[in-house]
Length: 285
Image (cartoon, rainbow, N blue to C red; front, side):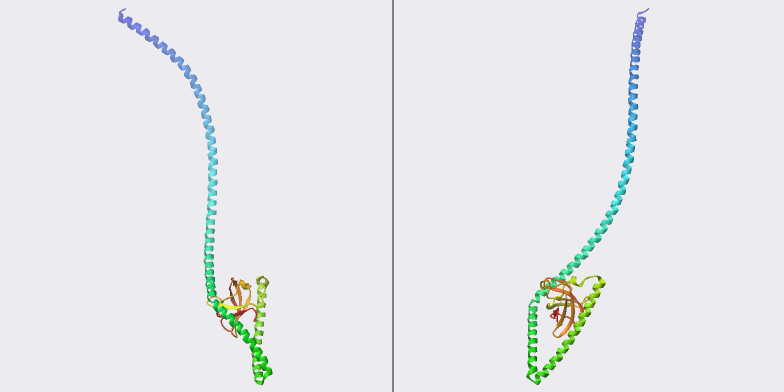
């Protein structure tokens, strides 16, 4: 055999040995890979089971969350409805509050004007009080003169006769006023029976209170009369005053609003003329 042939023979043997060794190594590695495959396959199956269990739990939680979302959506819708109703009610109350505030401001402005008028007419009121005292004094003097004239002369008798005629007229007027008072008391009793209130709740009418008219307005739904006595003078709502100017009887008013130094009321019984500032008022004529 030539040298070349020997070389190829040796080379083939070496290569065969290498292939045999490699084959043995691959066979051993294949056994190791089978073991690892089985282990990995077992782990994979366990992971799949864990995954399926987790998916089931997550789906259950998803269902619960979806139910909770629907419940919350329904609750939100209900709360939004209640909120809208509350906002509407609040808007209505705000409007009522605004209207009441405007009305109160108007009343306060009117009372402020009345207080200002009261202060402006303080001097006139003092003069009116002095005139009232003077009128009483003159009346008493006239009565004394009448009594003296009766026993003095025939002229005095005639004067007395005239005075007695005037007294008769005044007594007739007083009688008419008494009838009007009884009629008013009857109407008050009927009103108390109809509306279910006790007239005593309005306070006991004083025997003698007197004052002066500050203002009288006939431009509204009913005449409003303001007088110069109020809480400080023990006036209470429900009190009635007769109004007169000189010898003219102008009617009767009932007090509705009482302030510290003045009061306002409505005309319950008209007289012979309209009530005006400066007229006198009194609980008992």
